[in-house]
Image (cartoon, rainbow, N blue to C red; front, side):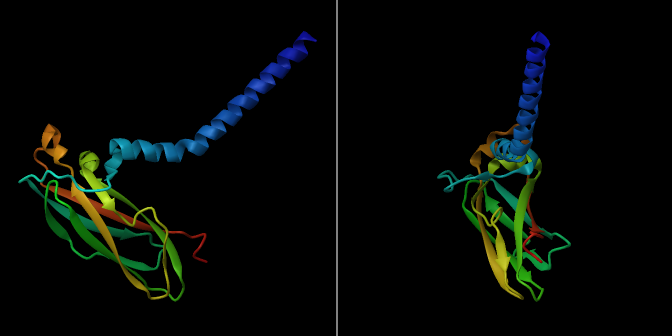
Length: 179
C-alpha cells in the first residue's frame, strides 16, 4: 500500500512538471518580447504616447532600412533613406509597401534599431509594426512611423559617440493566410 501511494505521488509530480514546462514554453515568446521591450535588448525600441518636452541641440542621423520575406510578393521601401533629427524632437517618417501579386496578401512587420544599445532611447509614438497588414492585388500603401530619440541618451556615456541610428523593418508573410 505504501508503494502505491509513493508511485501516485511520483506520477503526480511528473505530471505537474510536464504541465509546468508546457506552460513555460507557451509563455516564453510573450515573456521574451516583454523583456526586450522593457530593456531594449536586441535593439528593441520603446513605445511612447507623446514626445518629450525637452529638445537638445544634439542631432543624430536616422537611417531607414526595409526588408521583405522572400515568400512575400511585396516591394517594401523607406520613402526617405536618412533623416537628421534633434534628440527629443518628434519626427515622422514613412515606408511604402506594394503588393506585386494578383492575390490579396497578409503580412506583419518586425523592427529593430542598431546600434542595439540605442534601443532603449528610440521611442515610437506610432508604428505599423506587429499589426497585420492586408494588401489587395497591386495595392500600394504608405505606412507612417512617428518617433523620437529620448534626451536621456545624452546621459549614457556608452552612446556619446553615436551619430547614426538605423531603424530597420522586415515584413514577413503570413503564409497561413496567403494561399
